[in-house]
Length: 84
Image (cartoon, rainbow, N blue to C red):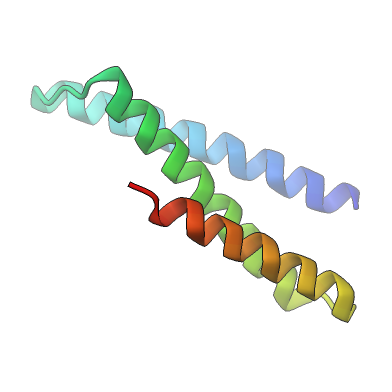
């Protein structure tokens, strides 16, 4: 379980780095987003990364009960990603 936790921490670090890079690129281009738009993009990115991690876990899991839990969590993420 420790490895999965480390993977999530690494993924979160990578996400934060990418968000910072995107913000810097936008500032260089003269683009500016409202704080609400930036927050929405951050939330969507976090949800996408969580879904990728769940898909990886589903592929690695042998336990049918755990697989169903993961599928339900992925369905919830899909629903949240589809919200306006």
